Image (tube, rainbow, N blue to C red; front, top):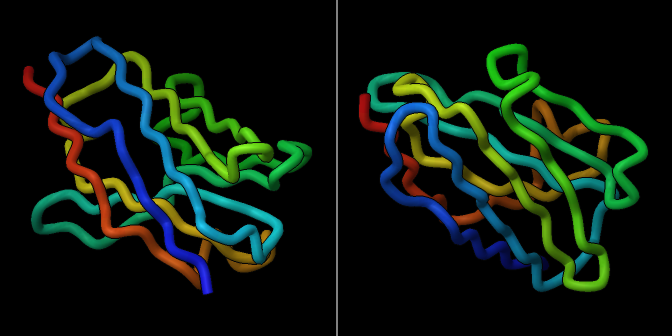
Length: 119
C-alpha cells in the first residue's frame, strides 16, 4: 500500500507560478504523476515521470509551462507550474503507478489539492 499526500495548491493570479509536492509513503512502482479535474470536466492526465526522470510525459496543454521532477531520497514528486492560466484551475491529484499505466490506469491516488488561477 502507498499513501500519497499532496501540498502546494492555492490561489494565484494568471501568469503566476505554483509548485505542487506529493510524497508517497511507499515507493512501490516505477513512476509518479499528476492528473487534474476542473469543475464540470473529466479528470485528465497532466504529467508523469519515472523516479530517475529518464522518462517524462506531459499533456500538450501544459508543455513548456509545467515541469515535473522527483526527489527519490524523499519519495517526493514535484510539479512546477509557470505561466498559469485560468484554464489550469482544477483539483490536482498525485498518482503512483507503473510507467506503463501511469497515464491511463494509475494504481494509487492522492486526495487532491485545489489550484485556482484568477484572471
